[in-house]
Length: 361
Ligand SMILES: *Cc1c(COP(=O)(O)O)cnc(C)c1O
Picture 1 (cartoon, helix red, strand yellow):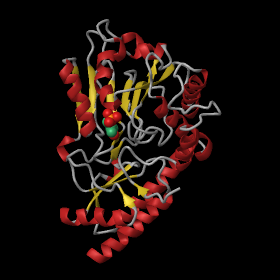
Picture 2 (cartoon, rainbow, N blue to C red; picture 1 turned 90 degrees about the horizontal axis):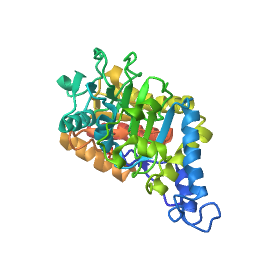
Picture 3 (spheres, helix red, strand yellow; picture 1 turned 90 degrees about the vertical axis):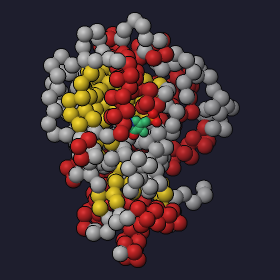
Picture 4 (tube, helix red, strand yellow; picture 1 turned 45 degrees about the vertical axis):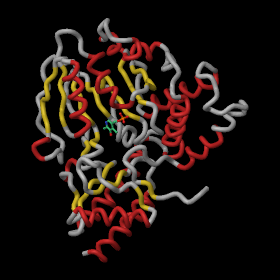
């Protein structure tokens, strides 16, 4: 295989090499079928097995009860911003939202467009979303509490699941799903665009608790109802077969190669701590998120000037360190350390950062 770079892209992002290699095989001949995974029928037994095995792995990884359905949808996490309120607010109820950054703001914008009742019960906008709010009062009888578990752009992450009593949680886990174990019990729905931590673009991962399926009003179009997809095992219409196949390989990699979510978390903590510890002792680089709100997945930092940041990302590129530019809306730098990133890549990044600081300090 040609030389691969240390890929710190925010999404689409790095995937395990073993997954790419297995996909390469399957793109020509999938399991001796004489057809590519891109050519088999989504109604065939071999493809149904792909979906079923992926669902089983999710259930095992999260030790999840049969009250939950695992779905593979399209439209990205962005379509979930509207599908969630369309489906999950029974008439007379209102939904709670916590605003922790760009993606949460977009989710709130969609419920505003739909004109559905909601309340933003906490926000960290006062300090440019550099922290996770600690105080929030969940409204009594709320339809759900929506929060973004990891804020990809601002580099913050909920250290633990927010408490909402009996109110079902709805979470956008696009950029940290399966980075660590969590208890699915308090969740009504979880969604994630696959292209950060779970696979390639083109498929949206959803976990929904069965009782949530009954909430949908009558006037929601067929394709936008969770119950349509849940009732057909995500095969109501043609799904993105290749993307789902690759997600199934990533799940297999987490379970069999890494050894499950506890091991995944240990590996992710080791990587993130190495980089944060380096940032903390440096006076050349400065982390942007509050320490107690720091993300394991997206490490955001700044240099002394935008000019220097430009030079930093350009020179990093020449050293096979890619994807370090911050999101265009916030600037600065960002290293995305998703599940597939190896410790060696973080070490290589830190070596480069030391060297760059010495030459430009
Ligand atoms: C990337 C991202 C999205 C948008 O995902 P799409 O699949 O491109 O719609 C939404 N939420 C979070 C937290 C993200 O990181």
